[in-house]
Length: 291
Ligand code: HMG
Ligand code: MG
Image (tube, rainbow, N blue to C red; front, side, top):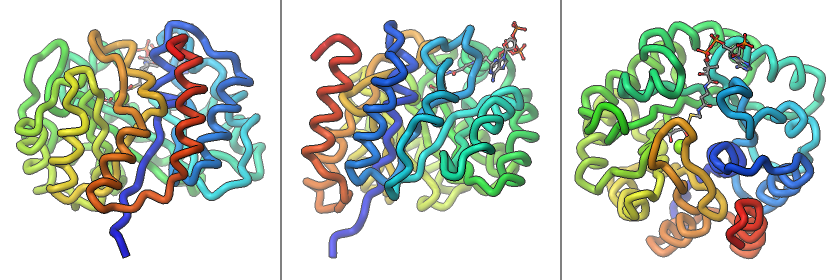
């Protein structure tokens, strides 16, 4: 029986948040419903961040209210602070089924924390403290992201110890799984391996996911090294959508289809239907106008 790798789809959030065009609500819902029908175990469907900062995600409440929940995938949303939690919960608490996971995020570098969250790393942890309490009180799961795990567009290379420290800060809030983000796609197999060695010292590898952007064209090589180092969860964005609007030079998350091809070629099982992913990729590429 081949070992399983979990593919965590982030295109509807990390992808669409970076598209210049605001995708119509019905199209977002159709894309997510196709993704959840593909056998993907987890899909991040939106974020409750400031619409002034990320107008592309402003309709996330309507998105979650309009989705199909007739599938086994776990859905999640990204929340930066209590305003975001309140906006999410005002919709979710009225729904019999809905996203059951909340993703929170901090940066390993101060420069990106300031640009993305308008606060220091320590302040971002303070903002998340009540969010984590609220998520746990509602009986929902948590996921943590750490950004700029190898390189920061403002501060340069990120020391591996800074990523380990960020991991400890998040997991002091709650013992959540962590997704390690190469936000600007500048990581290499060497820098990724050095970072993972430091983080593995403080977090069990089963609780770590790799989140690679493909700006430097090395995302698949970075997945390969992370697989060798024991990671079994990877984030992908359908059709290679995405990036981060507050990280200059961060276009394109690793495409889900290419990610699945790599891990399956290396003998792992994903349980995802390739034909449905291909259809969703075409839909995603049409959304960004590059179909
Ligand atoms: P701020 O301006 O410092 O916060 O933003 P504030 O509390 O001073 O509020 C300012 C204004 O925003 C107020 O409105 C608030 O009501 C509003 P005003 O009084 O000016 O009219 N506001 C909100 N509105 C709706 N929802 C909210 C919310 N919070 C405040 N949740 C904040 C702080 C964090 C909100 C802002 O910096 C923000 O939204 N940033 C967005 C960052 C973001 O979404 N980045 C992309 C996601 S992270 C990522 O992509 C990386 C990842 O993929 C991993 C990787 O690749 O590394 C996860
Ligand atoms: Mg990202």
